[in-house]
Length: 307
Image (cartoon, rainbow, N blue to C red; front, side, top):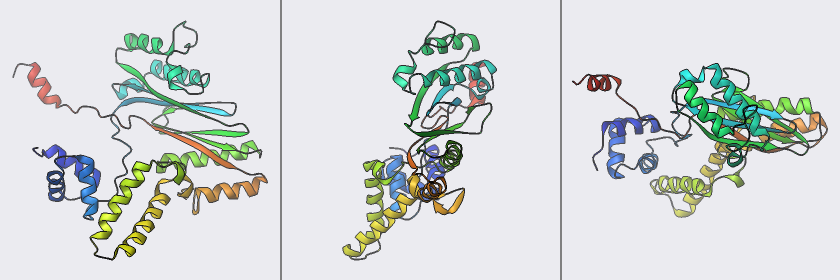
């Protein structure tokens, strides 16, 4: 397979490695981007790829909160211009409010009744496509609820109330003071927006992701020439560090780096005089995982002109 300049550029941006190293990695792995990243890491030429997906779609993320529950939705549009349209913003807000009635379940949200129109959410979005003149899709939704406690929300890069680019939900179970609990939840939600943890705890990490890290660490350690017994200890040490970096409860709390998030929750429980349990979080970043085709606008114009 031929290795293109665009492939080398993408790998450089993802890995931070040099151009020639990236070209060599792609040749060694027949152009497989993930395998190339692992090859670079094995050689010590790249940092661990923290891939949240390439953010390439426009539209809005919205959050909405009810009693002991909250939801987050993502509605995509073709351009950022539409995201600034008041009609589109109202549509996304109403979709988020409607999501509360179905506990954020995506499968139910599309067919749920959109307020005041007699149409479903899916039908209303299609109607808006005709009005606004741009393709739109309901991409995803999720919700969290608690039996006793709060579900805090946070919107990063907010452009209107409950609307923006990154929406976060954090669920805390506790019989303690709800205002103080909500304040803690919002701080943790801000932390999640900033750090994008892979999972709540080690137990909830994707086993495939853990195995991938283990394999890379093992190859790195073996290149050091140390005995297998030492290599195993090296790998376990690196995995512990990996867990601290990617699981929410083990991360250093951005509000107070002297504590982990887990430690901050424990401190809050002492202050509230009641146990506090961090039961879950959801983080939606607009467009993550969607790749938008790059076009050469000048070439398009030239082609349209018949050149």
